[in-house]
Amino acid sequence: MKRTAFLSGLILTSLTLASSAREIPVLAPEKAGLSEAKLAEVDRFMDRQVGEQKLAGGIVMVWHGGKIGFFHTYGLMDREAQKPMTPNTIFRIYSMSKAITTAAALNLHDAGKMGLDDPVSKYIPSFANLRVATTNGLRAPTRAVTIRDLMLHISGLTYGDGPDALKEAYSRLKPLESTNLAEMAEKLSQVPLAFDPGTDWNYGVGIDVLGRVIEVVSGKSLDEFLAQTIFRPLDMKDTAFSVPPEKLSRFAANYSRTNGLKVIDAPAESKFAGKVTLFSGGGGLVSTAHDYMRFLAMIERGGTLDGHRILQSKTVKLMSSNLLPEKAFPIHFGKEERLGAGYGLGFAVCTEVTSWDPAAHFGEYGWDGAASTHYWISPSDKLIVVTLEQIMPYEWDTERGVKKIIYDSIQK
Image (cartoon, rainbow, N blue to C red; front, side, top):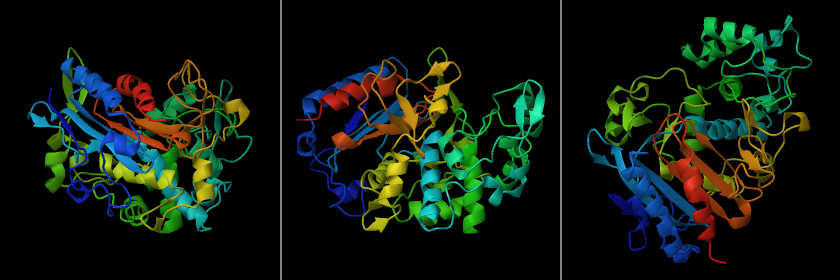
């Protein structure tokens, strides 16, 4: 099985894992406080996944105690072209975009330019006209939607699921097909809310609306503001809303499992390879293992990395703590309740270890992306893990398959 390991003996700059070798050294597992023998089980698991055509290829990257002790690639980034997975492969990260956009908005909050409890209508006036869909028609919400509501997914905005009036408006207006965030926000202001703000949790387009708020407050397009505030300071050179021609050779194909693996988005034909004008802060970014680990390292270190402070430490605490009101807890997708999972300003947070995620550690926080990408941070273990692949719809295999192994690999 094709697998590449990046261990000690390789100089850091050859991997471009950090702008400073002092910040994120790449070492053998034991040098990072991890068991190499135990982590070999991750290799065996990932090799089986590729061999059984459950995924074309993937990456698992583990940071422990400020050091990367495991960075392995598996299989192929493009089966049709027989291109091996490489450490700088570019992935569609979909909803892993949400934490980045939220962090950018919180940067504005830290600068005193935006309040968490500001009504969204302060920045998008049409949101003052929102209505709630009920079985008896439409009515005014009990209170205004706030910036905090958008970040926590308790605004009542959805991806089109909810009461019939909401579904009808969503189908008619097609907000996700807008040409830019301003147009999208205006359309969404005409879609009824699924519930009163703060009374339930529903995954939806709130972070895309937050992206528009960022544009209004900063006076810059979202792509420009993210580049200025997050990507350039953190050396995230391959994170963007599109893949330029010179990088297409590193862009992975996206697959579904249909009697094996079927390509659903080839690199050269992907929308990410073309001109993008709708900068979806909720799901529109592409990135690499290196880049996303840099972002998470900034979070784990309290909002700063390589001398660049992106967020205040107290703000990072808001991101990594459960802030859901009791009536909105736990987070859920339809009838599927994720017991023991709360939500902060950008991340899901483990509030209790349950049968939903028995390998989780209390206080662990993270999220995932629609193409089966995943990440988590465990503060008590000083651990960050990023797993990347391209399979849709979301498959739990990698997350569930490697989590306990990685936790068990930590040397006491």
